[in-house]
Length: 384
Image (cartoon, rainbow, N blue to C red):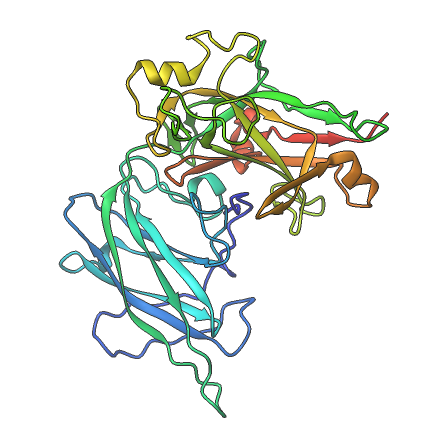
């Protein structure tokens, strides 16, 4: 699975195979998974399906608390387990995450895969799709080892509830020229001096996906405007960029690891470029056909920082800046960063995250299945 990059999903050596045992107190062998330092413990509990008739295997994901998944963050799972449909008894099934390091804070979540299209080896298929049942998120902190011993008490009795149907498909998209509408792989060339690299405008266009790995019908982008604090009927411009504030979708442009043979893994630590959603035609800002804030207002949608306006395309501006700090958000000119010795030239992943927590990234592995537009990457070129 890609990290939301998401790079190729790290299945921890395809996971140790764990037999799910129903009787309470049964002996569960805990086998260290490849890459897990010893000593280790485990997290175990019960998955409960609540109030729905959708069935299928459950995909349970474990995230690091410091690197949460969308929509809170952009983290990748560090582990996953599949609870087979046959393990359910009266809408409950046991689960276990083996080989969890001590003193680890984990976020457990996941989904019931109603259409059975999960595949750990494809980033875009490792998430919930429309009709799946979302699993609540629980925080679990594993204990430390006992004094004078390698034994670490396990975390048991965790209850995960699957109860909310996922209403939307992931935001599958293509990158297009905003004027010509043609599929593009956007690129920018570094200027010889600081401040000369141009900014890039690109259209993120929702597109249906039909492949042997997955199908995505009617994908949308969840455009969520910031609040209307001054009550003038339009979202405010609190960041002072001359545009109505947009909270979602979030667009990140992240440098790919040049050493990854698949060309899909995001470099860590890496280079992050901001993506700014432009919800209007800056040359004609009052045009109701292109000003999406006006369009949302005309539909009576509230500007409350939460209500989504579903759209099928958005213009994104990628300025010649590098994010140097996230909190508070701090940027520096890309030429200045390059001059400091940081490698900025190369291919970049474009990651789009909806307010639902679903995401899509280009390039992704679906390109191997003949979907050429899914191979597009943003690129920073050397000058000359």
